[in-house]
Image 1 (cartoon, helix red, strand yellow):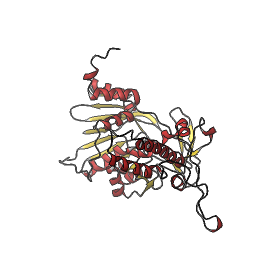
Image 2 (cartoon, rainbow, N blue to C red):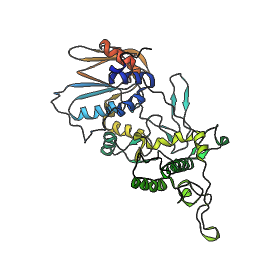
Image 3 (tube, rainbow, N blue to C red):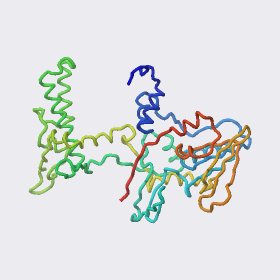
Image 4 (cartoon, rainbow, N blue to C red):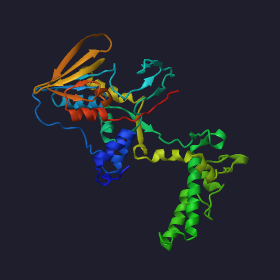
Length: 374
């Protein structure tokens, strides 16, 4: 393959290639690394300006984007109506509880038999601390939040190809991986193999920091002892009586951890989107959708499958059929239309848009994901 022209590739072209090959989530991360995704600059309630003079807005989709738009536009004086495909609001923002059922795209019906109080969030299930807008809406709408634990140090990591198939505690893998790496760096530093990188004073500080970070002993080794067990846990915790002293646990060697591959899972709590503090609505993620529904639910028409979106110089008209009753297609018009239908669905709808826009809708990829509730 010729390399001609690669140096002149624009960032837009690069991101399009990444998105097409790896999905929107990877493309988003690539955009973030290129400083093209700044942190949210949301400072508070949206203030819409201008005089709508009774103008009407048709919103397609009652996911959170559609619900936010309905709330803010109605507050600004617009006449709002929302068409929603499902029989509920929220879109991806939903929760399954015991007694609920869901029919998959292939027609298979899943019945949820969780005990009372248990639930599964099939879509989003955490709110990062820097998602300022949604956190503000939760506060304004009275959605009670609680902390979400992204990293459970007492959970298990498992690989059928490592440790004879025996699961290992997350804290064991993390403590022993950090300790092993710290010991290797300490040895390199003590042997003055880093003279060109750090000064003598820096080297002493580095050694001290490695001892603290990796729970190393005074000789800069990571081994069984009280220091390492403070990170990975004890074989027997401190207690009263004759067995009051804690019994240290034996670390896993660094070569075993490297071969196991379990170190790959230590990064999740460090990823920007998943760093502490994370939040979740008490009782399920759909508590957010229900809060919006209390405000604008009367404007939502359910079971509406949009089949066409047409526009001219005066209005926008959407054609839809009722997914429950069928019958003759219905049309509804408004001065403006705000469409939040996912691109993968929108590409199947008869649209009045330009060819480049249509191509963009058809080309937009989505990253596959799966969740399992047991």
